[in-house]
Length: 511
Image (cartoon, rainbow, N blue to C red):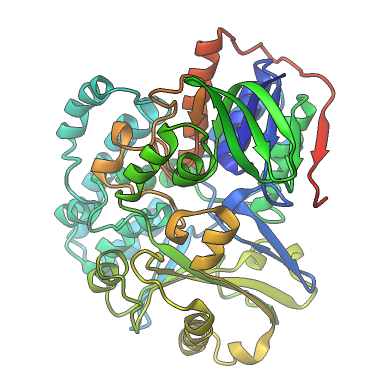
């Protein structure tokens, strides 16, 4: 019998598996797809390498800690490169703002927008530092298993007026609308609407200011590959290309997982990094499964994304690694995406240009891009993406031509689109949601998915649907919280710089 089975090799599942294996708990990691990564998947096409999901790495120490558990260092497996500026923010009138942690450069740009906002920005930094301390340092890796734990956190959240939205909080410090957008858009990176997401998420600004923004040479999936290599060196086993179809139970205990190929693994501990609703509704063989699944369907789920991956002829040194191309509307567009379920005629775009930092992701003389637009999830807008996808792709390319590269469309040599139905099919993501539950105040901490099931005592969860939420630092913190629970429950303790046995890799039927 395997001591622990972890379902899903996304960042959360990998981080949890590493923590368990580092503590001497024999762990099997089972992944449905042919490549580890979950949302951090990777596509290769005609010599181009495309990151499928997260492209912004913040808080490298939370990742380095996974290697340090066994006395190793992250640079053995991953080459992290600093990105500067973090993002270039661009508006339709041609103005732009290079967002970074260079305080001198930031202050000059703020003063150019509105000199009186310099003092307000300084106060916002203080606020971001305070919510970072309360929401991330103190509570980020704390499992909220009962309402009492929420009550203990409530005074600190109340002091920071966490019921206010990120945008409303930012607007209380600075008056220039472009600066308000520049300081509030970050919640979109974890699936949250800046107009409604709790101001506690201003902590992202502090994370970036302190730790910077980074990129893994070769793409974000190289970080996934590095985590996989670490796990296997520790003696962990990864089974790829074989989706779990059932979590077996006996009474109120999880006993085994069964995969599509018929493989069955008995375990003392089962943990899922799969989509939270999918884990309960579709996988859990227990009366609690459909009941909890029905409850989760009534929750608010984050939007989906339409992502256009492009291999382009030429090099573009004037275009930075990350850009946000704001559209003509901010609040109105967010309402269309989050409230009305409308695919609007206008959009804001995230442009990822990794070959600006790493030429290896494209053939010589070429560049790799992806253009991303947040769109309503399938529950809000059940659109025919076979029709809407090509239309939206053409409009996105036209916008890049209008604002950045006039002959962009003529330079494209290969493309690949990823739409809401792909999130639903490939990741079992409810409604094709790209970030799981929305990070609202009433869906945070105890109100979010729990790291351990309330009834099945050896069934655990990690990932974007659990506390603290989406984003690489969030799911890695979730794994830390879940690992702590498991190790406490089974009476295990991390060994100091321990090494596991020789690794084993299992291959599903598709390998």
